[in-house]
Structures are given as structure tokens and as C-alpha cells.
Image 1 (cartoon, rainbow, N blue to C red):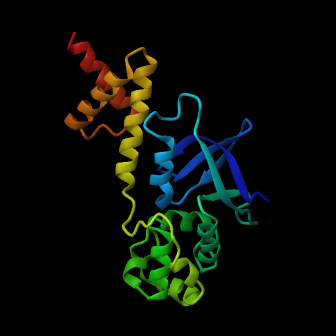
Image 2 (cartoon, rainbow, N blue to C red):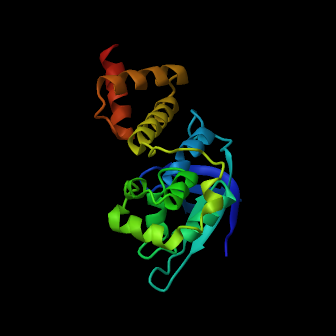
Image 3 (cartoon, rainbow, N blue to C red):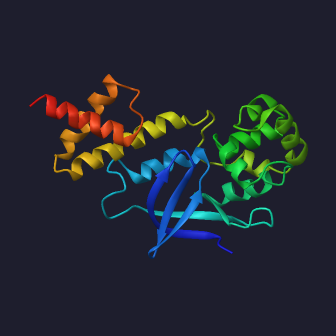
Length: 220
């Protein structure tokens, strides 16, 4: 069983939400709760992941494989206590590993306090949970997450804005694509920012890159 991965951050996909970790040439696909995304994105930095050296990352892993889902699912956490909470979270009826990872778009401490305080409104707002799910979570876990409620973690008590994160990721990838064509990085950053500001509908790397190149051709 895999309990920890230490390697290099090789790919990010906020839609998953998942990342790929390169460990001595072997890549592992790992689901990562959205609440950890800002910290991981900060680790990746503004330069993107297309140029060496790739940033180091260590993850505490929950490994899951069942008869109904024989393909192993790895879920990663930056702190061991987050993984410990996750393992309690998936004991709630109807909440499996993938659903739990997507639901965790605020900090573990925020979720745990909501459970302890029977704050159904906060729990209901978690993606995919709903009112009935919130009641099940409280009934199953109240009194069992006292330590997590006092935990010092990322402190995100508001949902992570996935669209904003993905927009930033698209911009970084577009800059990398334009730089690979021989343009200076600083110019590429400026052009991408200008095009994004003029047309927010450009949400794919390919479309944003082409729009920048067309603008450059038109300005010659």
C-alpha cells in the first residue's frame, strides 16, 4: 500500500482535481482536494511545469481499491492530519474517495468545526453533499473530529474558486507555449494578459495561444 509519495510535480489539472507526481521516472496520478490547490499552485510557481527542474512535492497518500472499483485511486494531502480527517470523512454513507476529494473545497478545520457545531449550512454548500448528506456527516462524525476542528491548516473558510485557478493555469501554459516558439518570456506574459483582458471567453490554452499569435501577426 502506498502511504506517501515524494517526487516532482509534473502536471496539474484543476478539473480533476488531480496532479501527476514523478517519482524516479514513474508518474503517479493523484486526486488532490481543491482546498489544497492554491498551495500546490504556489509551489508550481509562475514559470509553469514545462521547464526543468520540476518542483519537489511530498504527499500523504490515501490508497483505495475495492471490488466495485478495482482501479486504485490515490488521494494526496500536504498534511497527515488532513489525510486522517479524510479517512473519517469517507466512513459517512454515500461518500467515497472521489466524492470526498471534490467536496473538500474549504479547509479541514472549517469542515470539522461545522460538524462539531452542527452547522448544516456550511456542510450543505460543499460540492455534491446537499442537506441530506450534511445530516449524515453530522450524525456520523460529530464528536470524532474535535482535534481537526482545532487544526492549523490553510485556513480557507470560503470555497476555492476553481474557475479562477484554471484561468491562471491556462495563462501560464499559454505563456510556455509562446515562449517555446522563441518569443521572450516577459513579452509572452504581457501579450497573454492583454488578450485575456480583452476576451475573457478564451479559456483554453490553444485558443489563447492562437489569439496572441494572430494579434502579433496583425501588429506587424
